[in-house]
Length: 260
Image (cartoon, rainbow, N blue to C red):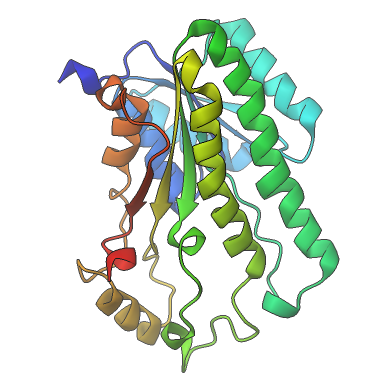
């Protein structure tokens, strides 16, 4: 079971305070990694880090603005100065700008791209190039089933959800992330760097309309939405040496939503 251990490893995760991010941070820390949570909202991240540190885990907070390449490079250089390495990069942050759906503005679409597409490219390159010097590393992209499928509007009928159409930028960015994962796996593979993407399903947070929840549950093979532990095992596996011959993989973690 030592293959699954992350003892002595350094992990960086963008974001980390959200419903999925929180459990990813905890999973990495539980497996033994020192985890850096990086985002603009350091106050929210610090709350999560303090809670996990009180449980005996090694979690730290750093500032990151994915819309600013200098911020990305400063994050990388700061962590390498302290740790001398980064073994794991989890690209988890996402900025949801198109709250008005399909008819939202050009400016909001471009703002989304600047963070969710350009930012993804820049942080992956910044850390990936440094990982090459060590000859080993795992990059994990956090995607969505929306990067594999189009929207199913029948889920939303009779609710107030996506009245103006599902946000197109999210589908665009997550679809791009899926194939960018294959690109990075190919580009860095000869240096011993792996890159995989987890395509996550819907998370039940208690606020969704009951009709939506009922329909979504029926659309999965397991009959439910994701909970606060469902992603933890997948993250540990891809971050650890247990998956050292897996790269370029597109892995749905969605209760079978994309299988039906």
